[in-house]
Length: 252
Image 1 (cartoon, helix red, strand yellow):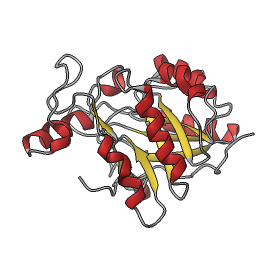
Image 2 (image 1 turned 60 degrees about the horizontal axis):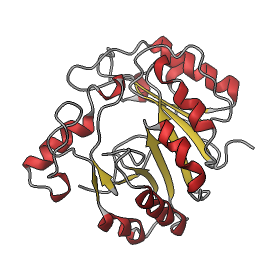
Image 3 (image 1 turned 90 degrees about the vertical axis):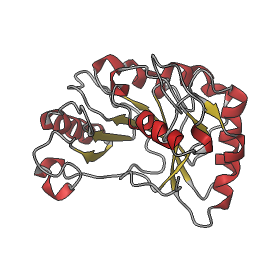
Image 4 (image 1 turned 180 degrees about the horizontal axis):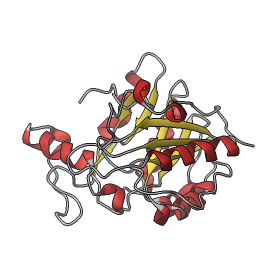
């Protein structure tokens, strides 16, 4: 797979681990699970380990790739990098020593900005004080519904330079969301087969909440159930044509 990314809020992807297991409603139509199945059929070496069919699938078993740790050293120009677009670095089966090695690589390549996203916010909180947090690491959690709001409290306790939320797929209004000490909010609907609809009002509420909290909102897309082109920002409602990035250190 190419390191370059088509994801609107990043420039490249880096997968020192691959594979995962579904843990919440946002995982129901996981793009990475579907892609892993296709990559296994194509013979891709990184996607030959099958996961538990109840929570994972073909080619999507959690697998650690020590050889991938050298990849960021080969990039000649600075990049914004989404870490583990095909996995979750804080999955229970990723050894803490390997998580530390990933963080060491990120610290050793300060020219790049790394965006780490997890649904395992509890483990993140539990191990955060056993990791060194360089200033080029942004740490985020996924928040799809109000059931996932406790993940935000876990994230707040992590000493990352930027803390962010990925509210994608946004599956309901996030009433009660507290953005204190959160620097960035990514907002998006769901796309692909079986996509669930996102009410643009839910996204608009998050944009307004972000503004009041001094947090940067980024509306990635409106979901394939949206009537227009769900990725073309020019077709979005005016109040959702927002793609901002946080300050390098978003709070004191």
